[in-house]
Amino acid sequence: MTMHGPATAKPVQAPIGEIGGIPLTTWRWIILVGGLIVLAVIPFVTKNFYIFQITLALIYAIAILGLNLLTGFNGQFSLGHSAFYAIGAYTAAIMMENMGIHYAWTLPAAAIVCFVFGFLFGLPALRLEGIYLALATFALAIAIPQVLKSSVVEHWTGGVQGIVIIKPDAPFGLPLNSDQWLYLFTVVTAIVMYVCAANLVKSRTGRALIAIRDHPVAASAMGINVSLYKSLTFGVSALYTGVAGALGAIAIAFVAPDSFTFSLAVALFVGLVVGGVASIPGTIVGGFFVLFVPNIAEHFSKGLAGAVYGVILLLIIFVMPMGAAGLARLITGKLMKQGR
Image (cartoon, rainbow, N blue to C red; front, side):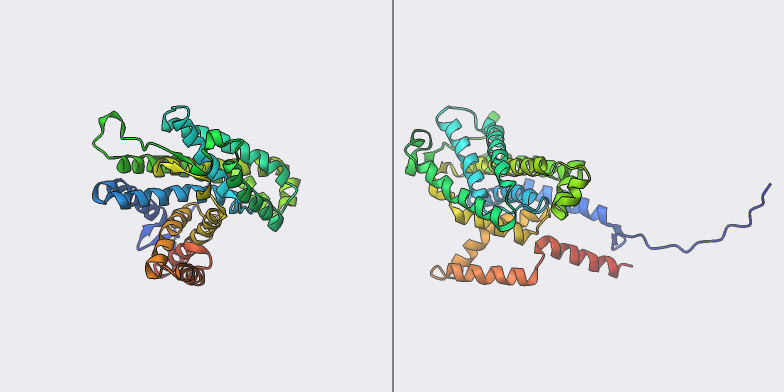
């Protein structure tokens, strides 16, 4: 029988991952719950114009999230996501105005159409990498608005004139105006999309996407079907952007080919970089940047709005080279070190 001596007291180590004595995971839950409360309160304390603008910012955030899944987590560059946004928007507009289908059903329809379109586009794009893939997607962004103006599909798309949509009212007799209801509808949709994206990234599939981004040869050697995953990622990315396009069409109540030019694709890419590449929460910052910063630049000077926008963008990139998500990680790391 072995005898054990008295237990020796071990030094108590400070818990890792705390800020102000509160675990980092708790802080994340506090921020998440606080953000949801703010989102729920906004439509009841804000004017309709600002509700509409915040709705558009959230819609852009969903579109940037789709681009981030492709570029940030899978390493495929795209300058053509305005095309998928346009396809989703026109899918919703055509179904609502030409077919009389309820607006809620246009979202899954836009998702399916854009997934198929993105997957099929991703198949030939497998032969392209880097700037060559970006060039191919650039061609897609340039071509889609011209196709929408074509006389072949003018009966459906309305040609240059576009399609006017009747903005839906709140259902079940809820005491909400159209802007309030569409805001809440967009928030619920965004929450579902973000939860799905977070689960996707954390899943085995998400780890495969990241492995392909970091080292495609090693990923292939591990048994990952690189071609299939790349094409599927293109489809899922287009799905997210298409749903955003459908929401945008419903919120604005109008679609036209000139609303989906290459400048929209660039704006989404800028929002991705500003929010933080490979960051899901950062896409929300990117969405608000895409909507509000051009308006702020125009407020300073209408004649030099482009120059002011460029200066603001340069300053942001200088201060946050890794985007808003990188800055948040840096601040969190410093606060954690101070608490030890």
